[in-house]
Amino acid sequence: MNFAADFASIILGGLAAGTVLFIVSVGLSITMGLMGFINLAHGAFAMFGGYLIVLAMNRAHYGFPAALALGFFGTAALSVLLERFLYRRLYRAGELDQVLFTIGLIFIFIAGTTIVVGPEHQTLQLPAALSGQLNLGFIRYRTYSVFLIVIGFLIALGIWVTFERTRIGGQIRATVDNRRMAESLGIDVDRLFTITFAFGSGIAAIGGGLGAEFLGLDPQYPLEYLVYFLIAVSVGGLGSVIGVYYAALILGVLNFVLTLYLPKGGTLFIYALTILILLARPQGLFGRKEL
Amino acid sequence: MSVAASPAGGASAAAGGGSPAAQALMRRHRLRWWEALPWIAGMVFYFAFPAYLGFGCDLLVTILFALSLDLALGYAGIITLGHAAFFGAGAYTVGMLATYNIWTEPITSLLLAALVAGLIGFLSGLVLLRAKGLTLLMLTLCTMALLEQAANMAHAYTGGFDGLPSLPIAPVFGVFEFNPLYADTQYLFALGVLFVCFVFVRTLVYSPFGQSLTGIRENVLRMHAIGSPVRRRLMICYTISAAIAGIAGGLWAQTNAYVNLSALGLDRAATVLIVLILGGYGRLYGAFIGAVAYLALEHFLAQIYPTAWQLGLGLLLVVISLFARNGILGLGEMLWRRYRVRRVKP
Image (cartoon, rainbow over all chains, first blue to last red; front, side, top):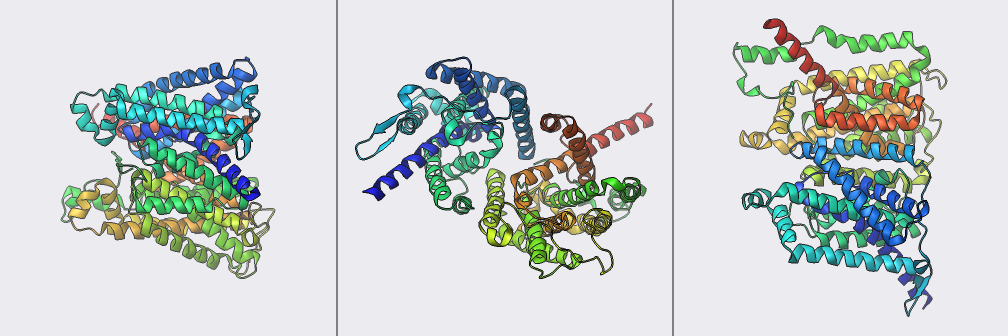
């Protein structure tokens, strides 16, 4: 019984961390699938939104939902500006220029955050309703972790339904599969991309805020978790929501277990597994498109 | 990937005979007077700034590392985010051989570092070079992270996070001692190693082999079509590039007399990429210009305010990737061409 409870709590912890990873990376997967743009600065949007949310709650005393909304729309607005004026110029550039440009953006975000807010770690003050323990029948577990897992599932479901059942979802799928054909059919790919970019950044912002206590929140955030976001996206498959969801959950659980039992260098197995998966399936587990 | 105005690109089809094109090709790899400048500057630095020789060693190591990346990325077009894997492999080879007193002779240590890094480059290249684009980026990144975690895991041998301090290094040629307080021997040794490696790389990129690498970068399909063994060429190039990165890592370990996990990190891989792009890739001397510009900027901006350095670097990267894709050397070439055009046609 004790072992089973331990096991369940490890799995739940891993799932919660994986859910955060999913919420942050799903936008990256869609925008990279659409445009083939290697946006290493995606984590910077998550950090920006996380700061908006945490600061709105801690300093301006916003409610939790209001702060999340602020984070979503604030980050989406910022990302539209950056997309319109900077990203756009590099769509036809080589991947090297894209890598360099987005690494530059990461540095700007890190320095900007350090200057404006300061280098210290930010903590999220949870609302009372989410800070206790929840009785799940077989185990008592932190309400917030369960809340995260549920929210993540709902977001995944929502995006999946949007993808499969709505007009804009169909346009996105068509563009991911064959951009030129989609353009010839009259889909306004530029507009589509701006919308998905803004939405993806907004979702990432929510992930940054919700995950503040799992991944932490300090100016180094976009660099620290960059590799994890990229692993989730590339293993899951570009443009595949389900793929990123599974990949992020597996990654979360594996990372949780490995750092618990092998604190020194245990993440080695994650990298090894990633390499093996990508060698066997360069398009990722659920992707239909070569990266 | 396209580098529009690369000096090594293009007209290789028109070889042979005394045509202007053939002469232009022959001229390209002739030694020019200004190619002596970096080495003169290196010697002047030695005499003029004796207090900054430690900084000078870092500079030389960075140049050598960027040069190795230039071979893979600039000439063959292999976009990698994990080049520090080989730097670290070389550094740990030298470091572990020295710490456990197995081998401390500096020159042969560097050759062993090259061997180990080259071997890792060869083995990883066997599987990695099938991929391209984001997959390749991810695979190189993960290979490096894998090595980093392996070094962390084997902390009984590698010292883990703390690394291996105060490495004993035998005197160069059995005569010139490495002085831990004053880096004069280290500096000259590093300059010598850089010179030998540079001559090797320069010869390589102007050889028919180097030409075929440029061809692969510019148009892989055409190289396949004319029967060039693309995969084998890329493998050889990647292995040599890894070996030179290993020498750079070994040199870093020797000049600093320590090794730690920072040799293998994403920071180092990103830095060398930035240095090379800043200077201009696919140009040999981009590594020199980039390293000088990067380290000088870091030195001065970080003195003002550490965060200013990060902000400055970020802005610089954004501006370069948007407006000056061929780096400082590319900008210089463009200005020079404009100047000459204006002089010819007044």
